[in-house]
Length: 152
Image (cartoon, rainbow, N blue to C red; front, side, top):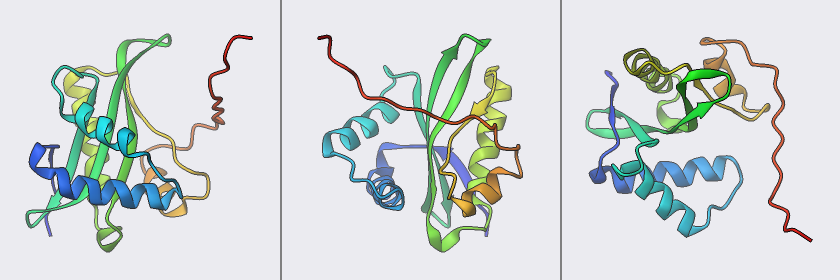
């Protein structure tokens, strides 16, 4: 089967939501409806130029999504592409859809002059790490995240 990678389109709404919900379930999180709505809108809104999405398609069916954010950095002149979310339907995992999505982002990076494409995954996500390790070794960085703290 051939995998086609293309930009996310408004007509992908139902399939994107199905895969997005499965992605959130995989990470054992419940995404508030307003966050899902705004994420979907950002990925398609030309005014939100730093947000975009790609889909992997097989025989006309969307089987994978990549939600991305372009951003500046203090470590390079060019923008970087943060692959915020990558999810492939479990029924087609291991068939090249995830690899094709990442390779499409690599090609876009070369065409657009981005500094790099980067992403995070759970340390325990062995299936994804087998794919990711084919592209690069893990960075060795540990992520920290804190909520906002109101001024006292």
